Image (cartoon, rainbow, N blue to C red; front, side):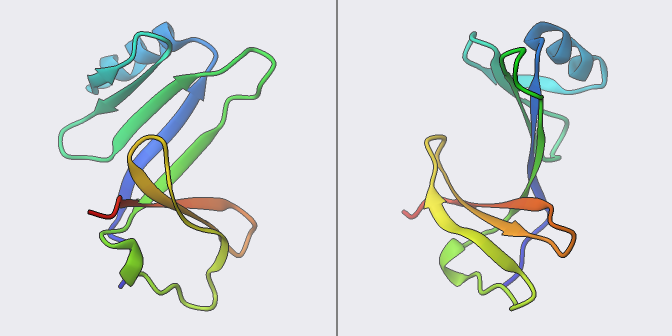
Length: 114
């Protein structure tokens, strides 16, 4: 079993309001907002876009998450370096981190166990 494309893109920002307006101007719709500097956007059926405001003293990051249908059935090829195995997250998914040959970290996301 392999990944099934992109699940989400996580964007950190220093200005939630401006960043939210930027993505809305590009056609993304705000689906969920906690009112405290973070929210989830979607453009059609594409991947989720999760935007989170971070403090000014922290460099804003970007993370791409690949979709996995069943974490228990995923058997990465030996070329895939597993940094952290699947773990439950506070936002309702299971997440694994892998490293590509150039050292970049990738997130693999699966639904939580039923």
